[in-house]
Every structure is written in structure tokens, then in C-alpha cells.
Image 1 (cartoon, helix red, strand yellow):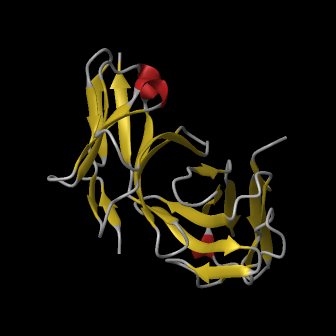
Image 2: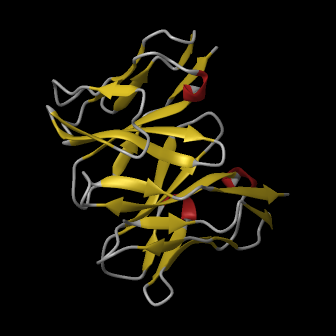
Length: 114
Length: 112
């Protein structure tokens, strides 16, 4: 079965500094990987996905993620954090053998302080 | 309006009652999903559907029933609600391989 792990429950970063939210995956075959963001009392919003092609994927709100096959990682990054980036971030992988379901990590809370 | 909508937005029900959460999408996506979100567990899949009249269990299906008589609707029923089913429920849809997944705004269910 496919799975993803988010090793950090919370990440704290100062506004203007670069941020990284970590994700590692365990899949058979080529992974389809996703990042979603959830603001308080809201649904999940799509940030970006990796299916194939360039290892650096650019997404919404200035976020990007780097797919690293040798390290089985898909870390989310942003060069300069904003206070408004504070939210809950989920990494997910597609489980194609079971109805194309998404399997989620436990989530990482990002806190950006001014 | 185009999109995926869930209703109700909030629901309080008593233990033992039956309650149905509604999900409607306007894209004619083949795949639809129900997840529950609980602190410390992230999102866990309850049921999914690959097409109308095709449904299957996810990770935590016990106590839930789904149906999909029409492509656009995927209701989730709690047959006899328990306090452990207090959670936030999200519906999602996807067009399939390579497509993204779009989530509804969620239903916050409290079982008292």
C-alpha cells in the first residue's frame, strides 16, 4: 500500500524566511504526489501535484515542491514565508489500485510569525 | 454553481439516530470519496466510489453506509450515530488518472 509520512507536527518560521514542510513517501511504481492546505474551518485547497516530468513543481501562492526519487521525498517549499501562510498542510499520494483514492499524511501545522 | 457542495455545514445529532450527509458535484467526475478528519489522524477514507452504482470500503467504513445512484451525488449515512463518529467529514471528487481532487467545505458533525 502507498503511504506518506510528515515527520513534523509543527513548523515555525519567521516571516520573510524560507520555509520547508517535509514529506516522505512509500510507494510501488511511480508516485502521484499532492500537497493540500487547510485554513481554519475551511476545506482542503489544492496547492500542487507531481505526476511526471520536472522534479521541481510550482504551485499556488508561491509554493513549490521538489520530488526526490532517491530520498523518496516531496518537500514543500516557499522562498519567503508570509503570516497568511499559517495553516495546516497535508501531503498525499494517489493509491491507484483502490479507486484512485488519496492517502494522506497526518498533516503539519505551519506557523509563520511576524 | 459549478463545484462540489456538502450539506449540512454543521449538524448536531443524538446517539443512536440516523443521519445523512449530502455531497453533490457538478463536473460529472467518476470518482467520489468520503473522508473524516480527526485530530492526530489526518484524513482517513471512509468509502469511495469509482462510478455510479460502484462503491467500496475505505480505511474506516464501520458504522457508515453510502450509495451512488447518480454520478453527481454521493450521500453518506450514519445508520446509528455514536460519539466516536463526531468528526469533520469531507467529500471529494476526481476525474481519474492524472486529475486533481477537489474537496467540499466539510460537514462538522457532533454526536451527543
